[in-house]
Length: 160
Ligand SMILES: [Cu+2]
Image (cartoon, rainbow, N blue to C red; front, side, top):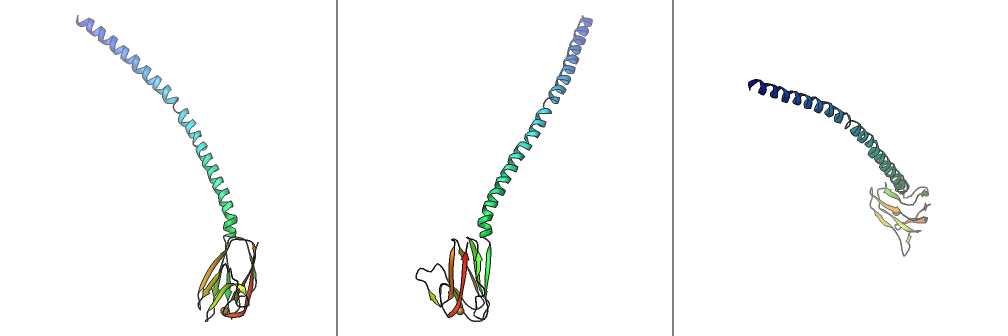
């Protein structure tokens, strides 16, 4: 009786050992298989990173698309000294032009000529001494700029 239990028990142990070995082997096999899967998902990571690269590429593309407005969204500065705007400037559409009054007296940067503002002036910047203000030239064209306080102050901003 005891011997039969022992044999039965050892048979159970043997089955357990076989099952354990099988589990280990199949576990290793499964462990070996998921490894290719993570590696495929790792190779899938280059996929997302590839799409990230594509996204960053499209972001770079949109950035370069913004760059033309941004390049045109660049800035330029007209420094007023001795009641003079200085030379005419040419800028790209979208450029913010800052009129910097470096004089110790007030000026304006006004669309117009010889101190006279045009009726539909796009900009009429009041520039107290030492101040600066900006206007963004969105549309191509030639823009006459004058100072309504000093009619001799004239310049042209060409936007193209
Ligand atoms: Cu002036």
